[in-house]
Length: 209
Image 1: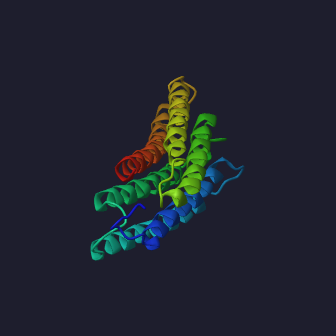
Image 2: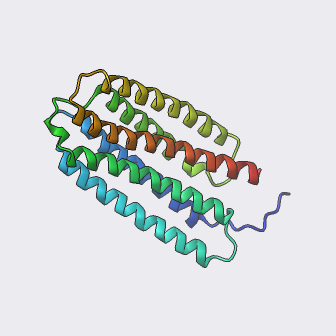
């Protein structure tokens, strides 16, 4: 019989599940940028609220880690995982905020490739919400998580590169190119942060197996 001195405190895993749900909620709001007559200001404001909720969640997790003598996972891993999850929402919120602040509502539509970036983020958020509840126990199916996350990150990279090609094609004025490039960079950083989360999960899996 396998015996572990580590407690299986469900409260820690609940924090990560809640963070995954927050991220999926945030990406769903971000996806509204592609809607016809989207209200960029309201989208940005709602994402500020979601990001603020996740900040509070992260602080509560850190407090619990610091006040718990024996944690169910390595403390450093939990800090890293919480931080990477928080990074995703930081970048998503920043992207939406820049779309609003830069007045990109004046464009007929956001570039198709940028919407493809958001679509990839949606798939990553769904994947995260599916697998984060499986973090407790770390069964063999968790390997599918980081494999698929890597594939989606590659899709995001392709969308980002195709967007750069379009931005530098001369279709947009130079100032608009600079604005769109900053938004695209935040979306790419969010996509990369999802993969960073999967890397932490893989590391935990290797340690705990």
